[in-house]
Structures are given as C-alpha cells and as structure tokens.
Image (cartoon, rainbow, N blue to C red; front, side, top):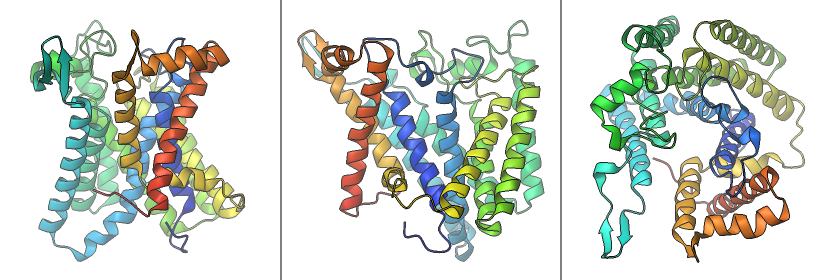
Length: 377
C-alpha cells in the first residue's frame, strides 16, 4: 500500500469505502424500521444501498488491472490455474459462510447443519464467478473492442433471455422471471435465498451474466487511469463516460426497468456510470488537490488492505451475535432494544448500530494492518 508513483491512493480509498458501506447496509440493526437509505429498493428503482455491491465488483475490476500485469511472465496454463484457483477459494468461502456455524442445536443435542438447505449462491460466490469470467475474457481476448462487443452482447442477451423465456405477462417479476425458474430447476428451492419470504436468489445463476460487465468496466477504468495518469484529462474523460452510461441507463429504464435484485442491464450501466463519477471525484480530491493531509484516507485504506477477511468477519460475527441468547432474545436484538433504540428510537438508532458495528469490523481490520497481516487468495 506504499504510495509509489504507480500506486493510486484514490482506488485504494474507493475499495475501502465499498467495504465500509457494505458492512453498514448489511447490519442495519433491529427493533425499528431501518434508516431509509440503508434499504434496497423493493424491486424496481434505486437507492444508495443498491450501489454498494456493484461498486465492489467494479473495485474487483480495478484490482485486476494491476494484478493481471503479473500474468505477462506466466504461461497460459499457469494463468488459467491461478484464475480458477482464486475463484474456487472465494466461492467456497462464500458457501461455508452461509453454512456457518455448521451445527444446529435442539432438544436432542447438537447436529451437523444439513447441506441440503444451505444456500449455494451469494455475494462472495457472485464475486468469484464474475472475477472468473471477466479474467478469462480479458486474458484470452486481447482486443478491447472485442471485449466491449462481448459486454454489450451479455447485457442485451440477458434482456432478450428474460423476454423470451420468462413469463410473457410479467417477464421481470420476482417469481416469474426466467432467472428464478432456472435457479429453482437447477438448484432447488432449499438452496436459494429466502429473505424475501419466498425462494428467490438475487445472486442467482442467470443474473450473474450482466454482473460480469461491472467487473470488466472496473478493469478498463483502472487500466485507463494507469495509462493516462492522475490529471484533469483522466477526470474529464471518466466523468464523460460516467454521465453517458447514466443517461443510457435512464433511457433504457423506460423499457427494461432498473432493478438491483434482478441485476438488470440498465442497473449495470447506472452503477458503472456512478462509479466512474465517484472515481473521478476521488482522483480530484486525493491525487490532484491532495486533500488527504489529515489522513482521513487511512480510515478507508485500513479495511481496503484486507477486504476479504474484514467482510467475512462482518458476516460471521453477526451470526455469533444472533447465537448468543440473553433471555428470550439474541444479543443482536437485545443490544438494539436496550441501548440503541433507547438512545435514539427509530431509524436513527438503527443507523447508529450499523455504524458502531462497522467500527468493530474496522477495528478488526486495524489489528490485522497493525500486525502486517494481509490475507490474499
């Protein structure tokens, strides 16, 4: 993380910001309605929370633009092995995270949690698959123009698949879109996400297709920044493309609605466009104006150095808080009800809990950083 001339602090800050806000939106407290900006859009539409996950995929692409330089000195077999190995480890970690704590307790004692009801796909699994396919596409197809054509084909292809194979009366519905049908037939209801009250996975098989484009765009944005440097030309072109993507997304939204949970093609363009504008702003603030003298950037780079372990800690620790019982309630519910909802009743208390929980996870990242422990896969 040293700030050499070839290192871009703005990209490190961007990656850290995505982790920080991902933790906040994933643990919005209990005992009250969540703070409105911390909620996803119910179905169609867009909220600030909807930007977090695609921004992390965009950050994965940024990191690839640096990491893939090392592939130049390796043979094709070694490169493919590394890509598949990394994707497999991330996917497995995501699966094990949903299986955690691996045991169930009832009146008869402890039992191994059944694999038959464990969710197969999820956040880390989508990151793994998007990284896998984006890396293979970029590595084997050297032409940027060809990759752009493939990306457009994936966005249009996803749209056509939903229209042709989904329920023609409601091709974009939660239970009537073809992606849900595919997930149920291939994975089964028991292996899908049930947070919506029904078997529906927002990180399912088919919707992974357009999500790959988020990573590809992040890769080319990172590569462009490296080639053009930390100047006003870089900022102006990134912002131009960003606003262009946002404009196309809003126009496309009139026929193919923006929806995070369906990961629609205009949702991809909208989030990539916003990410390009945010990256431009960070380059201006951090790299050009050098408004990082107060070291505020270190707050974000602390978790940005260890994104995977910090994210895993945030997900697993909250499960532990739910497992600890204080009377009839879990510790997670208890601390919200007796402290945060007393200090600030309602949505503000929910927000305060989310921020405090994020700071606990940040402290974990700080401990790793202080001891120079950096976990990579």
